[in-house]
Length: 412
Image 1: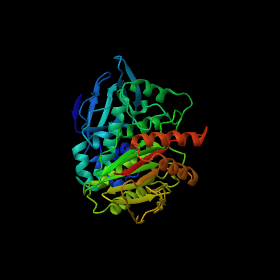
Image 2: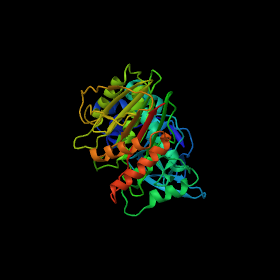
Image 3: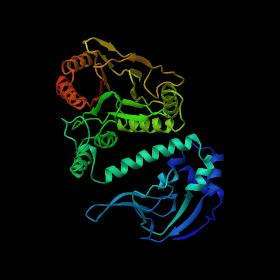
Image 4: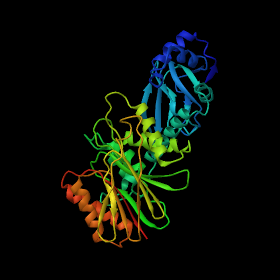
């Protein structure tokens, strides 16, 4: 490619930038600043702008011409993903990190391209600002998902009777089933859900703990469990669930997971601050008419102390060794629904043999039935109890199976 400064008047570049979805909503002044950092290049028909696997360092916009995006298949053929024409951009993730390109960009005719360099873009945004760090975390999460979908080894290969993800050998078959199901709008959501599911829980001193999510053949992909390490070294275990229809449910779950991790980089002093700041960030990006909010349960185990908070209605409670039960409370609205909300954590004291049970969602009757079942299986390993619970929940739901996430822990 022959590369140079664009040589185009600022007004002409601004007109192109206004058409790019990535820059929608920017003011005229912002777009003029953006136009001041761009460069330009010309490429011939058949020439690659970048190759799959190259380090990303710039975002491209087609000024004139057409560029195809293609991805290599395992059989050495190529799949055309899209064609970008005048005013359309490609390679936007490179503005946030230097991850390898996930596809090849090749000109299908002689083309003039606008180049937005990553370093100049980051400087324009203010360097290492909180907003940029949050976007970077989201880009890394999306990139991780893309890599796992591209290669074999997907968690989605777990049979529906398994409580957790794991078997990598059938990853390619699972991917084909997920992405080629006819008349199944949730297949992409389930593929995303599969990338979120942990394969096992971290060890917590003094506890036997396990988590899992049912993977339904025609499910919505609307539930998962997760864990994050707090700045003080403790683990916070999460259930995340989206009940409303609209966009693929795994999308808001993925954003919530990424924002949780971005907020941890700010070193919140307390779990309450982490939950509050995550809610504030998600509220800011919620668009009018968007009602797919993420219901989250947060469980922290610290010696004999248990700390609990929920955003939305998340069933949970303590099952004492003597069979008595203490139900967790609800502490606020789902994440992203309402700003300015302070979430308070409950505290419980656990003795040897006491158990903790959290479901991502469910009726009062379903949860109490699950708690009774746990009391009957006192002393069994946590992972066996989680699998037993999933089978019992699926049976109780009858033909209307919905994904459910479970976290179970017993004080040793």
